[in-house]
Image (cartoon, rainbow, N blue to C red; front, side, top):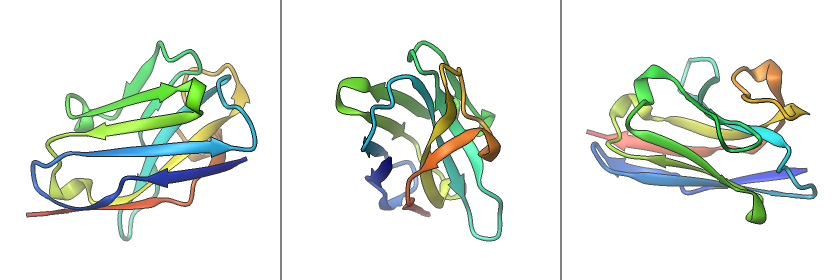
Length: 125
């Protein structure tokens, strides 16, 4: 399985970006998916996750109301719509699949199976 992220970039504060992550080599419709991020000098942590069915979502408190995770199983793609970006959102963003089928969330590194290579998001004030 290969996961490829896109959509990162350098933006001004309060701008929007939409990250995409497309999988190849295997269908991931039965896996929960997540977006993680890693800022310089910090650990990689979850930002948002969506269940395999798409019916359940999870967000960390700092992005609630600003970020939206969604998935398109027909195109093997997961998205992260990021609005009202803040400088503290600056990080490398990674998508990940759950390690096992039919889980609701992938919210820790240990729960993840496959990872993308990451895409840089920089928010300038």
